[in-house]
Length: 184
Image 1 (cartoon, helix red, strand yellow):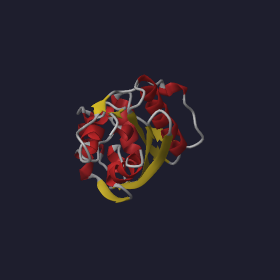
Image 2 (spheres, rainbow, N blue to C red; image 1 turned 180 degrees about the vertical axis):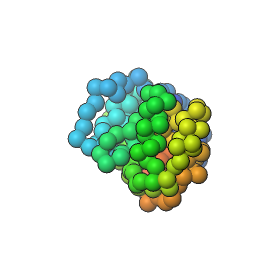
Image 3 (cartoon, rainbow, N blue to C red; image 1 turned 45 degrees about the vertical axis):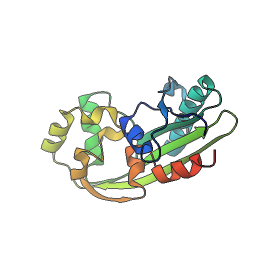
Image 4 (cartoon, rainbow, N blue to C red; image 1 turned 90 degrees about the vertical axis):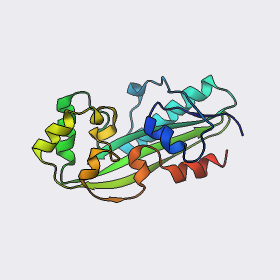
């Protein structure tokens, strides 16, 4: 098999890809996400995954590259990684007692062929008390996560239900990614 590269610095994506193989290299993309706009959060996440994948693919000819991006979608508003404690609090208040969607875009390229998809999971949280929001915002956990939460972390305490792939929320829909990867 060709060299496999994960174009993401996310420890969660690295851990999830390791369920399939440990024979891959991590090479985080320097793609400028601020240049991308789209009509919907799902389209945005696919374009971001493609941009990251293609940026790394251009630097590693002949390798198979996996690019990913994840956003939280609250009624059409994109929640990326929070910029501050107040931003994290704002996001968590919006998610409290409500349903939101998590979109993860995955793009795979071997330099010749590029394919991508978006997987979406609906997530419902129980109401989160203001005291719990304050406690969580005071930890490091929310700040490198879309929507200011880690489903595999403290956010497990608020989870009322999900429809879809749990791993999409973590940032890599494993089974769909592997099915696409095996076609390369």
